[in-house]
Image (tube, rainbow, N blue to C red; front, side):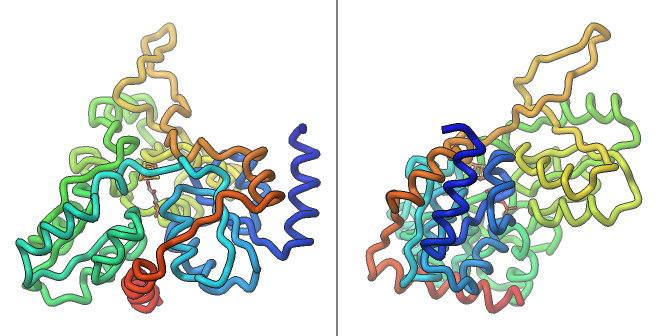
Length: 320
Ligand code: 13P
Ligand code: SF4
């Protein structure tokens, strides 16, 4: 089936089934274009909470589908590809967190939304990169806090709040690939460009950034800033919405550490190679098929979901 046919069928199916298609900014352009709603992980959770659709097709990674299902237990939540995982979520196993909690019984657990439902069930409050600072700041400055699993986001929040949260040693393999060397090279090539970086990048990269924020925050800054050129240090899917929202501005994806593409003058060639291999498992065909056959349904054991919903609802309350 070609793309046009897929779009036609998807449009018909979503009408017939009262389905909503939600997509993260890291999805391919065709999926973002067909989605009813696109957003960062916080906005996807907020949208799931308020939709009256019977079916949610969550085009993102598995933990995003789980989050939607935990928030909307009575809805059918489908994902285009069940193998779309997340290296960050994988870096924190529930059994390891359970052990760590037992070793630190008087600590409160703050978990990034990039975690499994099982880990959320062990968490006191959830955060995304959009609201991490706001939520951490609701605790007294000397509160005993465990923050996981992203050491880079945790380290960044510690640095801007003056806290000493205990950090889980996890990271995202996509954002860890950005290097200061490459960023400096790019800045020399584009001296007027503002550097936008996601807080999952390493501290040395964040130190060079003009703006550090979630995908939605970076997008918002680019829309409102009086600057025309931006170096983007996050997954390159975000460029679709940046270019759509700001057609007169220029967005240049920062190449990862290992990228070795140079032009004849020795300048690095900007590339769109910072792609999350998990996010990119989703395709229009898979989106169409899961909606048509209602396959790849996210199911969560009730005893896990009942506990996990508490930390997500707490986050949603505190994010208002
Ligand atoms: P956002 O919450 O900024 O959308 O980030 C989600 C994510 O997976 C980043 O790698
Ligand atoms: Fe997970 Fe990183 Fe992919 Fe985001 S970009 S979904 S944190 S692996």
